[in-house]
Image 1 (tube, one colour):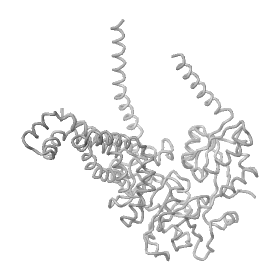
Image 2 (image 1 turned 90 degrees about the vertical axis):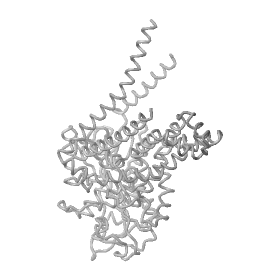
Image 3 (image 1 turned 180 degrees about the vertical axis):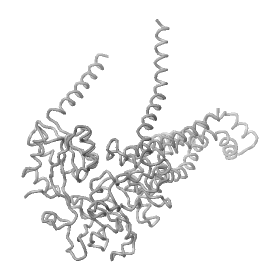
Image 4 (image 1 turned 120 degrees about the horizontal axis):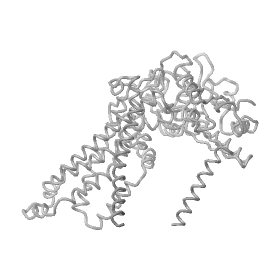
Length: 287
Length: 284
């Protein structure tokens, strides 16, 4: 009887484990099925590198280069802001902060992760956008920079918690050895702890970036959504995610526009898959 | 355990009754963001009058509403543009037969920040601004400031109407497009907010959204014509050049509850609500 119970539970867990992979494969197949149809209308090269996005015109122009560049620019900006702050914060929490402050900081960061992105977008729209406009004397504050700053807030919890875990998991002997050899606390952190945790920290960064590139609501609200190839971070951009979110409701099922949006989905899937795989590689290198 | 099971059972019954109710005495209305306030006002008054019936109204854009009608996930689609031939073909393929009912009129206001000294524009100038040929307010007699263009997203009937009737001047062969650097905002309210806070912005939306924080611009057909303010009287007497009909689309001729609601919307009472929500009644 007991063995039988064991057996059932084991199989149940196996099914749970396989289910997630099964679903990912199904999702990807569905994306492919719906998205690849767009290439009957526009070639892959013209789709990826076309400069005009006019999906509802007749005939539609389906070039997503401005959208890809928009997504990359916002992500790059967010990475530049969130990586130093996030890693710095992780070092402080793991190595420097007294216990009490550590607890407060950790709770604060968890809280930051819990804010829904639409709320961050809304706050960004009423506070950050006017500031960006005034500080840089821009015609409008709805720019890639506003999006980057807001997304940096979203990437930070991921970066901090995973990087902090990485720093924690370094064997105590490393630190003790460095200190015993007469290194200062800072030298220990900089020369011993950080290199030892580097693969974990890189993984943390990649996962943070993965979160940013897939983020939709906040960027849609504050980046202006102009489908133009951005020439600076102070220009409005339209991201891949915002395009899908804004246009999916309109697209008639089975139209060129509908297929094109699924093809954008494929592009996004490939990008975040690549990022996750990279993060995974770093994580495994550590072990 | 029994308690839990009971809870699940009760919840199931609730959801079942909700589904069952949908066919009987409730209808779904979906579509144009421009019309969502109007639709809700109609639904409220209607439900006051006929307490047993339930009307759910949601926005999302004219395209969203029409594609829901085509996929039979709503009973009435609100649309601020005519249905496209493509959409009719698709609907027919799915056995849906879109039926057009003109329910109200709307003047499309072009708004700027109150600090902007430009008060009037011709349709040509407007087209020039939104296609990117005119880039600075000084070309229009204003300050030396770059024009910030605000447009609705492509799922908006307002976007489509503005493109076809202002940018392309009703010419089906025209290839004019919004210049790519135009900012695409997801709601009329977002445009209203941005215009209120940005002295170099220009945007467009249904007259109902005008408030003291934005300044509507008087529009003329061409230089020789009279400049006309976007007010209800000018839409009724057909003087204002960018006004448009607002439609309700049903699957086939309205029947049952859908007919009851459409009749209510077109009644004197319904048309009074049109006026209250800052749109223009179709008949006086």
